[in-house]
Image (cartoon, rainbow, N blue to C red; front, top):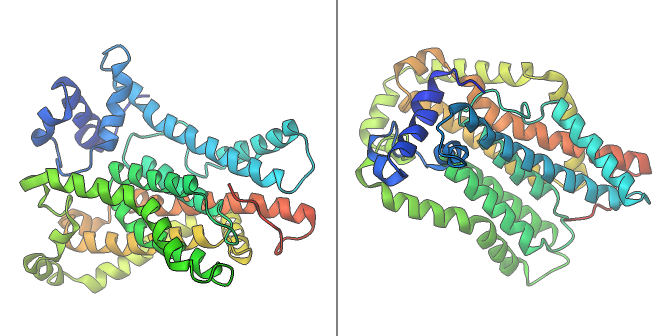
Length: 361
């Protein structure tokens, strides 16, 4: 891989190189560009250099590839499990069918190209958020979610947070998903709803909340800018500056830019994904849709606010990176919709699309 974008060198590979040459993160921290950023992606990028100690920037693309391959493996496992619950096939044929789904998914670039085309921060975010959606989709609403699955969701959220703190915007959506599970299990588990919800919330949210608390405790003065602390955009001075701008015009331009991109980006994939998301909701498998849909809404509103209050005059005027910012929420929804569409196709083959019993992980 040949790095070529400015951000790769200033924010990610450049920082990883500084950490590597200084012998560790702590020694280099205060010299890094945006030192308040969570360190996960920068540390992941330098991990391939540790094999033989050679600092070869192109090797860092392996970090994104490993994450993407792991996500494809998760997709394979979920599809295989869904097939086992529907068809009397031998394990070999089930695996072949699951591989076909995975290969079609990768060919459609549901979460981008298998070998990443940049080393920017957006793609690893997409992998973790998609993993959360896949795992939520795999849970049946009419049965207890296993502690392992819930904890894996918690680890995916923690991984996403270590990549970028914007993952905190996904937590409300996950809470809504857990409430949806509790509501749909209410008649079957009266008296257990609250205790189950609290247990599930601890497993899912606990790792990220603990990780975020520990990270915030280490920041000190370097974590006071708006890039490290969203609360910095809500001070009286920040609010005054933001409201002095033409926020109505920005809202109109932002809505047009994001809406146009959503509709124009891989339109055939968008159509198939929307059909799949509709089927997921019709089956009472809506938890993942609720989580990622809520996340998309919160993320885009926050993105608008950051253009108004934090990013500066150039981003306010140009909306310069709206495409790659929007893909962070769009591609996980594409991926979830493609998975749901595949499961819908399995159910259609059995002739019972809306009342199909769906196995959990």
